[in-house]
Image 1: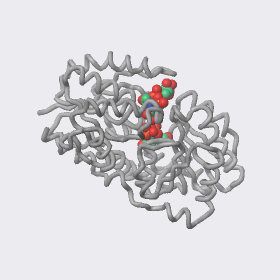
Image 2: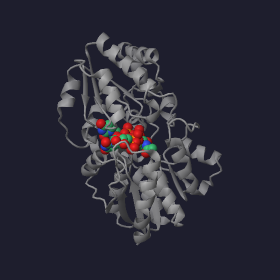
Image 3: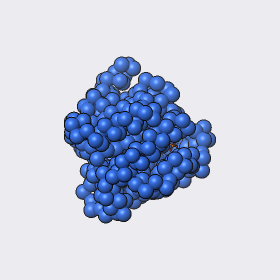
Image 4: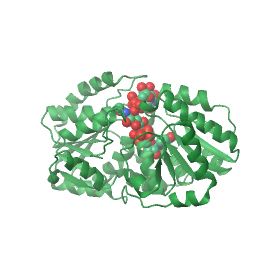
Length: 364
Ligand code: UD1
Ligand code: UDP
């Protein structure tokens, strides 16, 4: 039986790779071996528990305030022996993280074919998101199998000279994950808090948002909460110490804002599903908002997920205080504007992406 080594290390990769692990196990035609780098610790553990995936290898690499180069070097060094011991027929990586970059490089150095899940996303700007745009381009460059979530991602690859025989349009496995989590019952004080008023969910964590852009966005949210006391704004704060510091400094102490630890993905997905408005700089949350039909403001200057904006459910609000405030108020007070963004077509998949990828893996 062919062996596939799935390597991932962060929360978003786990959310999007676990459905594929479950699908490969269900089929039993390709042997999945799971290696987590532990780029994230707490965030990763939560997701593995939800999907009941026990890794075959846990490299436990996370360090507080880890640097990009230090983590890349640690991943490369630690992944070598795993690749040598397992000698897989294919290494599968996801997206654009340091883990994905290092795992693709380590496999490439050993002439092990690489498959890239969520291939072809581009902003066209190496500075945004940083360093993810570099990572995803490099991973695509060394990949033999590119699993593009959308036709647009496929077009990006074709424009860069990828042979069409190496690309499969599969949908995003994140939508498979959403179906899995929303099937589960869920009760949580955070959901009770949201139910007390007009529910809004906020997440922020991108490196290029740190500093002034994040402060501007948070100032807008703070004023919004003060001006609209009926809002209930839930913000699970990313464990990155710089994010924690900035978010707590700006938003702590406001009655209708609840700052929490990162939420388990089942509860978080239920919170998103019940929200009136989502505010986020996350990649995965953009896709989830579009899939749930909940209007979302993308708190970034650029996105590699333009399909949701074209479909009308996402709006690129930027990070300017005025613009973010104005767009929030418009969507929260103007029913017609809100309705126009609600339940727009979801371009990110039908919840069967893992099956499509598994079918390709069976045949390779
Ligand atoms: C990484 C990804 C980014 C993804 C994000 C998801 C890269 C280059 N970027 O960015 O694409 O959107 O994860 O969250 O890989 N930390 C903890 N506990 C955890 C996780 C993180 O304490 O469970 C802290 C650590 O101090 C760490 C910091 O958060 O140093 C930042 O994490 P890191 O994975 O290095 O980068 P992100 O900016 O989170
Ligand atoms: N998420 C979660 N709990 C939270 C916040 C986010 O489970 O408190 C999930 C979210 O639903 C999505 C993923 O984490 O599936 C997105 O991760 P993140 O925003 O950290 O990274 P990105 O997608 O931007 O790379």
